Length: 288
Image (cartoon, rainbow, N blue to C red; front, top):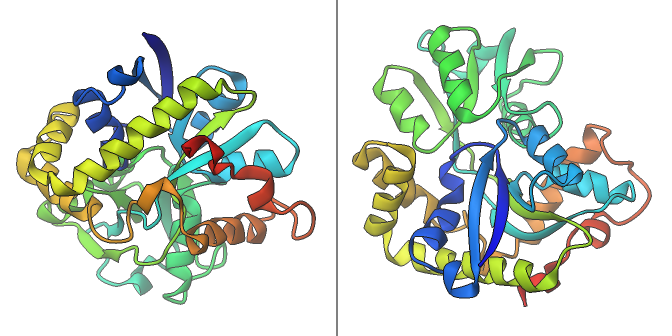
């Protein structure tokens, strides 16, 4: 049995396919045993992958794309989330996006993931960074929920089921993310042993295909992994199974990858000219 360490930001519901693969034996049948290592931030996951502290990562692809464009060893092997299952949650006194002007928006990174999704979402409502608001580095959605409850931030994108938990607690749901954006992906550091990487991706693909047809069983697995109330786990899994969230065959849609690359370019994290980011960073050959 090959032991592998999977770097993740948090026990987030975007990782339900991994939990299903672990619980239903998809990994063990392929000779793998996967242990998650929680790093707390997307930057932390990218660094752990680059340093060899984890074997593979389920996280924002942006750090790996930027690394590859700069000539580094990180690569994106598969997509897990093409439409982020996130909603903009604000503290109770804020009722509209306009109320966030001058506020602090919690995020898991200043260079990856929720920062870019939030910036794009706020821009559609007439708010631009840094003129209209500041970002506050808070960590995962679990830490952002603590910050919202403490009132140290004005709003944050919250992962399922923390969006429902927040609204039940009286916080304002300003709306879900609706656009494509490659938010969660499988990333690895080259050189990587093709045998186990291919087996890991096959197990994930099998679980991702099984999950939407078995929502209640998947929700039970997720609730157990996160100590979450079953009703919240079930609602979260239903949202995750919606069309356009998990890409078919774990191959992100071109528009989702283009949105992530556009965010990297607009933030100056990759140059406007130079190597083609897709050619440099994305390698679907491990999917078989």
